[in-house]
Image (cartoon, rainbow, N blue to C red; front, side, top):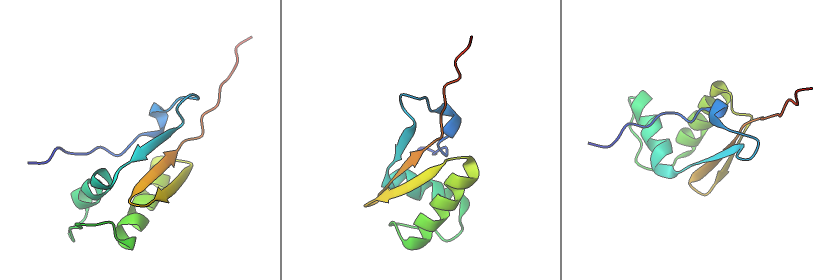
Length: 81
């Protein structure tokens, strides 16, 4: 049995690492965990679902590079006086 995938959390990012790479297997695993119509490859429907889910989860930007996605969070430092 394949391991379950958790959707990446933008609050786990830091100023030094504001992005996370989601690889094809992870994206398809996430898609298949919530959809009745199971996917075996990266279709436009899978990409559209993932992009919408990422924005709903709080990610600021989603860029697809081939069959991977780069998720970027808005991270800001607040200097204490």
